[in-house]
Image 1 (cartoon, helix red, strand yellow):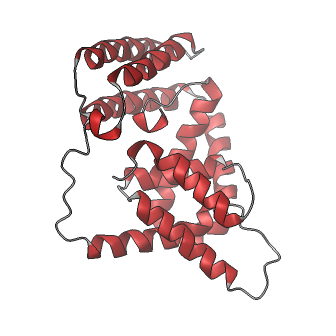
Image 2 (cartoon, rainbow, N blue to C red; image 1 turned 180 degrees about the vertical axis):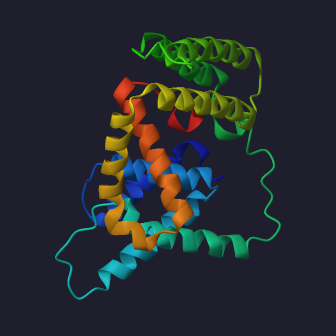
Length: 235
């Protein structure tokens, strides 16, 4: 994927430029970008889709309401991704997964991993239940430090391999947080997500909506417990 580590910030900045003013992205917006990333939608497709959505908006005779959510562009982003998929012929992406190809020093990656390990150790998490988020976070912190040591010892780093291991850690941590958070809190978060998503449901397919809601809940849980994202996308 092009501009691997700039995926989130480039989408945010492009959306703000086309909107014509600074607008901090909402939790829903960041969750939507996460679903695009997980679906393998190229950055170029996301940017093209944003342009197409705003081009359509600019043609409207009345513009009394500003575009206040990235979700307005969701349908066009998916269409752009499909167009690119159909047009792609024999694209060669060898070498995309190496740290040197991205210009990232292994020391920089290791520092990111160790910083997140420290935040996991310091987090105030529920300690009870069949799956203890607190215990799992401490174990994840230890794994991150071991991974940082591995990264430091290598001359080149296969970022895809590191990212897969981080994804596994995140998924286990999310599962523990969902199990350890009171049902009433989760229902409240889900209701808030439904309210924010309501104006844009007609622009998204059912599976995309469910994935977006899932990402939204995950982001709210991370905010609630002051936990970091482990993915290298957040370096």
